[in-house]
Image (tube, rainbow, N blue to C red):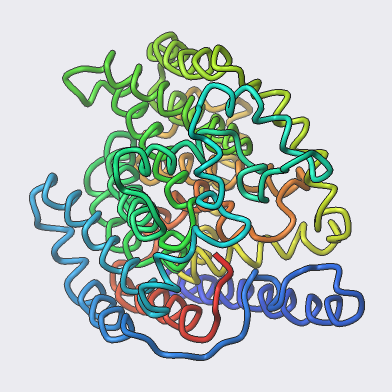
Length: 459
């Protein structure tokens, strides 16, 4: 090992330690603020969680799955046929996420999560007649409106609650089916990210990323909130865009149209996920083309037109949501704390390995910028090296996350809200030394297990 490699590894550890210190600072400062005036509205800052050390039926399975991924994940990712690897990545993520959720048991961990007072399933019966429900949707967003929606229904466009209305209509009603839907669909984001990374940065990079995409601490929230489902829809939109833009599919036009439809659905699942457009722009830049844009726009427009004709105005809903947002806890939650404490939440959902890898990604980007600067010219186009192309994709996701942070519309609870952005960040772990891959995977698994066994998360 050269002195340069040793220095890089030390900096990896420094970055991970800095992330841990950020979490510690957010916990200490947050606890002081919460005890002083209760303005944070969280029990265990910076997370929306409560201190609750416990074991559960999912504990043995979670430990076994973590060990299997750590020991066998890297060699399997290197040698399996590509399609099997994508399927196994999804299955592995499903097993890992499901086991973590089952640490709290079936009722608390999965079936009961979407049935609480602020969740979607509490208003299913108000959508017996879809037409009037959609036309009147915005009339029930504000807290002082008659029969106002619970927090999560009011906080999202109607596609979110309509998902669970649809499940109920086909005979899959109740918290158990809703929880399984979020669990199965949410974990498919791993497959989507693998496909996108392969299309944009090459198969070797995607293969090395696979174990890190599976064994992530964010799985604690993917399996217990609808935001994991939102993240998967957004990820598949971007994966299809990557396939269409790079023409790594036999039907690029169909992929582009499907990408647009899913992007439109994403925007009607969560207002803030319009920021996924930043990652989409990076995808098109890396592919050096805007050829898919007309079909993508057509697909997204079709979704928007359908909801508009049904009587729901996205823009009106968003403006009312902003007003509702400041009728609740956001009115007192201090921006000065959450603007950096949110990043501590991000550290907890992406894990120390990803923090260290992002340090390398930023270093790679700065080195490229310095090289271009010495030539007194802007880069002629996207990087040609696979690692550089991955860095662009990852940093685009990080940029979307930072814009969301600065907006002030995500004060707290970002451990679930930012899953659609955080899903892409662990791919940066391919920048870490292969010889240390298992050590970093172990760190990821240990953090997830500690979070789920020491805390009771609110989602």
